[in-house]
Image 1: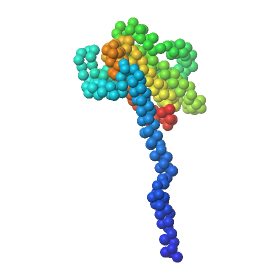
Image 2 (image 1 turned 180 degrees about the vertical axis):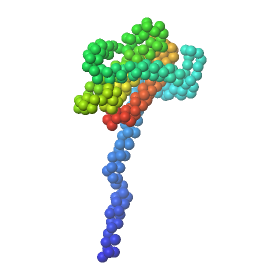
Image 3 (image 1 turned 45 degrees about the vertical axis):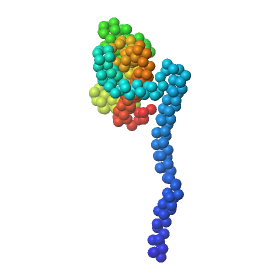
Image 4 (image 1 turned 135 degrees about the vertical axis):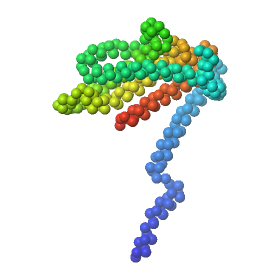
Length: 290
């Protein structure tokens, strides 16, 4: 009797081994494999369609470079991205760094002003009544419309471009931060009032943790807008920068370099956004990638 029972125990593992030998996979493993395939195949298929359309366009228009021609130009361009042959002839690496420096300065100034202002507008009704009409009036204005004002005030192209970045980056930070403060549950504020908490404790213990997801969303929107604006601003102001580099290559009728610059601008913008998405995910349990 005991021997018969011991012989019956391995039946289940043997059945699993037989199923595996016949080519069956568990449902969980199949779903994971499908997810990995979708994650790898779908982007590759989208890029393949883009390259195919690009090839068809270049075949119809001889002035438009093909993917192969652009690839060869990119290999030569990135073989030495940090060369310097004078103030107006520098590698694409120096131009990208110059644009990132302007974005960092303008974006940092906008964060230093916009986030505290957003907290005050959301916290105090008087501040909201004072600034909301101004924000509603100025927020829809194109950032490039502010560039002549910057040139008039600062008398130089570089600070004018930084000013354009500042003015376009500040609105998403103000608005999203203020909305986050206004959506803090009133029960929290009532408890703070009952406990007679100071304004600093209300800010650090209640407002900041609750508003952080909204604030980071505003920062993400602002960095994307800033990177878009700097390219256009540099086309108008000149100097070293990826926007000026694109315009200079157009004047030289070097279309492959223009296409390379478009790809580089997109990659840099994607990297900046993904960095902020990672920061947002580390500070909040909400789905920051959406």
